[in-house]
Length: 459
Image (cartoon, rainbow, N blue to C red; front, top):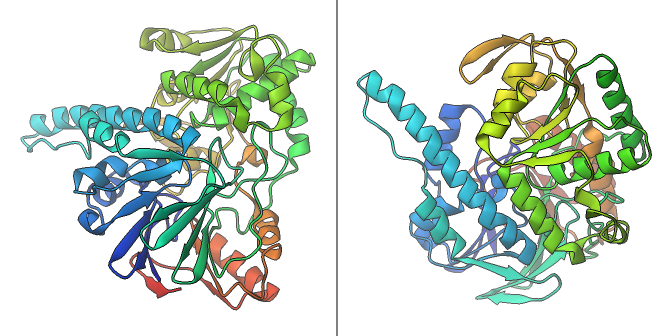
């Protein structure tokens, strides 16, 4: 068995890896690359492998950097099934259609400019029709239930990252490979802890936080309450760029608890995203996947994702009105890296006021607006215009759904090191992967590799 790496290597976006056994190919994920607009378009538009040669696809979870280019895969001739857990299928249906609408909207805006300058119009990377074709190929599987795909036997285990996330356990040619996807943290709210797999020959492991340690999650409530009270006392608003899947629900969950404890005032909270509203409904319909604590909250009034003063905003005109809301409030809006969506308009109207605060609660990839804000760059460009960053910026890594350095190392420590032959580190910037590699080698892992795009290895 061989593995070839095409995306999500030496970067944290665009996950694409292919396992090969004889003439059979299993694609692990087909995510969208996020970064510089021109670079991202080039990478996402042109798949680096032949889609017609791929027999099957399996995805660890429904984040767009892991599934977002599935429509392009099908558009280019892929004919097989796309396996993921049942909650991931429900989320993927929403996210892929939303992504297609963004592709179509962005290209309409771009083509207006191209026509005005005499340039030929472009086509979107994929359309709503392409997304619908991809959705038709999605197949939901249960945790711990083996699925045979030619020479490959797949088992999905709970990865503890987001709702429905999975470690993909693969056997072929007498070898056992574990692909972590995005490995979650222990003792996080809403979802269960990651399943520990005890013995594999090869590990393809994410290393997003391979050189960083999260602040203790136990401190998250107090930290969030301090921020909210500080901003409310000076009459400002809080803008939270948050992914529509998991992070938006997690923020709402904590705000509900803080309100019930009278730890924060009763200010309006707006979740400004039709997608986040629909995703939250998927969460409500899949409570069997929650941890015990969150399941207990399902009996409370409104469950874990509703409370008095919380509004989910669908209508675009209602969204625009939020920019003229003069009282303190909290606005939660995608995208998590500030690269698209309604959050751009809220940032544009809030970034220049020092009474306001931008709360960063997710990893920010290089060359994204979110990264520039998190780095406190004095001037940032939003929707093509420059704005001075005068609002306060706070970064809360405590919310991260990724295992940190210690979490990753502990996961490997609990694998049989006598059986483990090699680890491939993916989904990480080079410094993070290099730091984690050094620790793993010191631990006694025989071979730890940091693949580059196109690298192929024997397992």
